[in-house]
Every structure is written in structure tokens, then in C-alpha cells.
Amino acid sequence: MPADNKIILDLKKINKSYGETKVLENINISIYNNEFFTILGSSGSGKSTIIRMIGGFTKPSSGEIIFENKIINDEPIFKRPFNTVFQDYALFPNMNVFNNVGFGLKIKNIEKNLIKEKVLKVLNIVGLESLSNRMPQELSGGQQQRVALARAIICEPKVILLDEPLGALDAELRKQMQLFLKEIQKKIKITFIFITHDQEEAIFLSDRIAVLNNNKFEQVGSPKELYYSPNSSYMATFFGECNLIECKIINIEEESATLESTFGKFKIKKDNLSKKFNNGDHVNFGIRPEEISIVNNNIENSIELEVSEIDFKGSVSSINLFNNDSTEKIKVQNISSNVSNTYSPGSKVNILINPNSGNIFSNEINN
Image 1 (cartoon, one colour):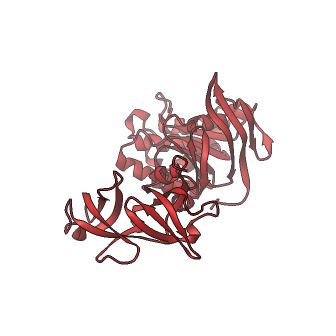
Image 2 (cartoon, helix red, strand yellow; image 1 turned 135 degrees about the vertical axis):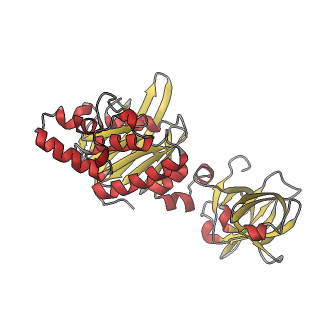
């Protein structure tokens, strides 16, 4: 949920083109005060263009950027109460940590004593008070990122824009910085707008996420909403692992619906089926691997399949399954490795699809 219910920033009917090339199309979003809002998309999806428009580095071709009920399309960068943290940090190489962080206050002609007080306070927040005299080249990547964040915080902006700030860090340091960013945002209570192509990063950090696809927002919601209630096949497979199974609806009853696939027939709760679907419709059924279990016997709603591969992941494993009538595979994961060790490629297993889970999407090709 958003940190509070006050909308601080609105993007309305935003379009952006470079010549004949459309980069963004009909972007509409409201961002709330103090929330950690992430724009998630693959490389080239236009997510950095949104940040650059909000920050004033480029203008939309059409549409309105509204901050606290005021249109700011023509507002220069220095008049916008936003600060940006870039992936390359953009630290001044000839200034130490203290002067890098205090630079924004210095050019505003703030008193030296006040600058010192504010810089030391912010360095304490980001855990760098003991490194104030270090030069940027003497710092690790994570420390440089903290300096860049401290410099963004010190002028007390209303919004901090973070353009893939963790992209250059190694995996372990990236995890540490994710935790740091999450803690800092809650501590200073400033709206963060974060850009990433990493789904796990977005899930961990965000109050809400907007997923960009084909120049548009595909879906906006909390991490749980996007994971458990994707609105399209694209969302189901892009946002976490998902088995997407081509099916035909063969029987809609009062409380359940029966689907037929090349793997076999199985039932789902009728609640999972929207009113637009009817008997005979071809659909895609999306089910997360963790919502499928392996059962010992051939019980109601179970399907017998053959083991294709077993992926060992330490204490747990994932198993890929198939049958001879299909080139599709079904993945089952979070299986205890003690259990998966009893199987091998070619083993027959029975799986049970959780009838309360999964999502139905239109299959435009077969309908």
C-alpha cells in the first residue's frame, strides 16, 4: 500500500517520441507521498525516459507532469524539488566525500556552519561519517552510491529519482544496497521513484510497481497484486516464474470449471474464471510452480507426467515435467531435495494443480 493517501505526482496522458519512433504512449500514473514506487521494464522499454521527464532533463511530446497540483512541464531542473541518483554516481572526482555531499548547499550560499551540521547529519544517516575526508576513488562502489544518495538527500527534496542506481554493483553488494535503500527511505520519509529491470529487486523494495511493456504501462500495483493477480499472459511470465498452459474450457459448473490441456484435464475454482469466458473457449492458464504439488497416488484432479529434468538448488529442487503428447513442460518447484532425489529423468509422477490458484488469460491465436 502507498505510504499515505496524498498524491504528490501525476503523469497524465504522457507521450514521448524521437522523430518517428514512439518511446512512451499514453502513460498515466499517480505517485503517493512517501511511497517507494518502482518502474520496472526490460532494457529499451522507456523507463529511464520517464525519470528524465520527471526530473526535467527532457520534455514529453504531449501530456502533463503535475507536482502537487501544479503542471511542471516547463519548470527548469533547478526549480523542481527533485534530486536524481544515477547509475554512474556522478561524483566530483576532485572533491572529498564531505564537499561532494555539501556541494548543493554551497552553491545556494548556505552558511558554512549550517552546511557542516547538515553534511555530518546526512553522512551519519548513510553510515559514512568516518569517511568524510576520503576521495571518491578511495571508496568502494557501495560507498560511492551512498555518497550519491547523501548528496541527493541533503537539500531535502520532495522526491528522489533513482535511475538504475545499483546496476553496476556485484550481486552481494547489490543485495546489501537494496536493504540499505529500503531502510533509508522509511527513515527519511521521502518519495523514491526507482528504475530497474530486475523483478526480484522491484519486489523487495517497492510499495507499488509499474511494469512497462511496448511503450505502455502493462499493470500497476503492489508486488503481491502483480504476482498473484497478473492481468495478462505477459505479466504472468514477466513478473516471476509461471507455467503458461494452453487449455480449452470444456465444462463450466456452479462452483468449478474443467480445463483440458495436452497434459490432461483438471478443475479450477469457477471464481478464477472471469465472466467473459465460456465453454469451448481456448485460453492460457497461468499457474506458479509453487502452486503445483507432487502427490503419491492418482487422486482426483491429479495428472500423471514424466520427469524431464531435475534442477538441484541445495535444500530444495525444481522438477520439469512433460508428456509425450506435448512439447510444453510444467515446472514444479520448492520440492525437498530429499524427495526429488527419489526421481530421475523418465520417472512417472502425479501432480496436483491447486484448484484455488492460477489465472485465466485469453488465447487470441486459437479463439
